[in-house]
Image (cartoon, rainbow, N blue to C red; front, side, top):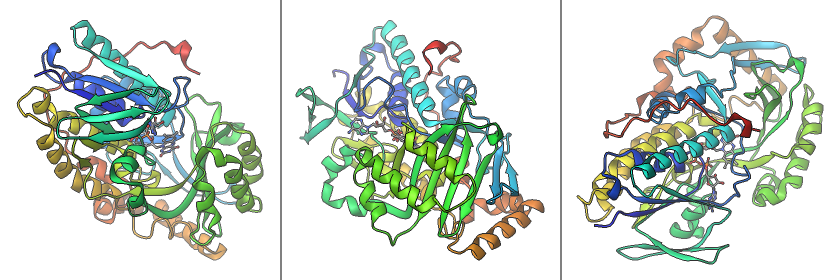
Length: 455
Ligand SMILES: Cc1cc2nc3c(=O)[nH]c(=O)nc-3n(C[C@H](O)[C@H](O)[C@H](O)COP(=O)(O)OP(=O)(O)OC[C@H]3O[C@@H](n4cnc5c(N)ncnc54)[C@H](O)[C@@H]3O)c2cc1C
């Protein structure tokens, strides 16, 4: 049997991770799959955007297997923990990260900017591809700056049309790893069902970075304002920018949705709406609004989860945020993407080796194994995002006092350690995702990188 041709849509976190493990499988070079990664953005770093994300539990085991741990740890933001601050920057409570990784606190022991992580996953996949090519395997073909506008399938193949090049090609398997707003999902599962699959949690957020100021430090500062408004200001890895997560929990004002549907084209309207909501909020809002207006890495969306009963249809499978986005407030999206890519590559081995004639058994196994993991990762703490973001000034005060008392007495750590999983407090689920042994070749530690190319 000829090696299967696999198209992976999306060169974020999940896409290149899947490609890497598919090539690290213990399969003779001549049988290794022919992999194409298609990324909508151009190579000019457009897909390397995004602010702070974390890697936890099983995710750490997986980056170690990829030989990526040292590079990732060298690129972390070094966030010390979370401080709850008021209008005067007075710290009401602070919870330091557990650097042993034993307790999953809001700050993980590995915090990194999404763009840097995506860059490392992509470049590491190139390194793995080059090694496979040296052994006469086909390696990975990367296509940047294009996307699919048609996907059709029959029993044997998936036929796709590339919108920009106009090319039509056929593959044995198509993996949609194209993020929360996945076009693969919309084309294959139907646009009309999107409102049932993409579940908003009532929160709307802008993500961007601003020039760092001397007092920004290494702590995440979290400021709450009445009206369920909040801002997190966090460190970057190079010490030159501070990253912002600016949000409003609001299901009444329809403009939050209206501006979200415009995507990147609606940045001006999105910024104007956030300005309207934060201009009287005090704290450092004047500075943040001023910088938001001129930043070029602004990203806005309705914070949502993707919920589906199955992530496979024939020869098409969804991976990562495309299939089961858990939302940034879960703290688990990236770990979920790593874990799922690892598992999918493992289950596909029988098909790639030719032991199974089609991928259906592997895809059924992927669906079955991922279901309980996804369900647990998508459980948000009770009352999220409402209780932690009160409506009134009085509510904000009570919340601060409560968290201060729990932190000061360290009761919060006892609760998280012993009841965190049951109560879905903090991203405990990352510790319970099993990392099976699929016999993948362990990648050598990646030590050298052309740092000059880093921006
Ligand atoms: C620009 C951007 C910024 C982000 N910022 C944050 C953040 O600040 N905080 C946070 O917690 N999470 C953020 N995320 C989400 C986070 O990366 C994911 O939750 C997580 O890492 C899972 O990764 P993934 O590979 O499944 O999806 P993603 O990381 O979203 O990767 C999907 C990839 O698919 C590409 N793509 C999308 N549509 C198409 C298409 N039609 N054809 C081809 N390629 C396509 C995208 O450009 C992207 O490279 C961001 C994602 C993106 C794309």
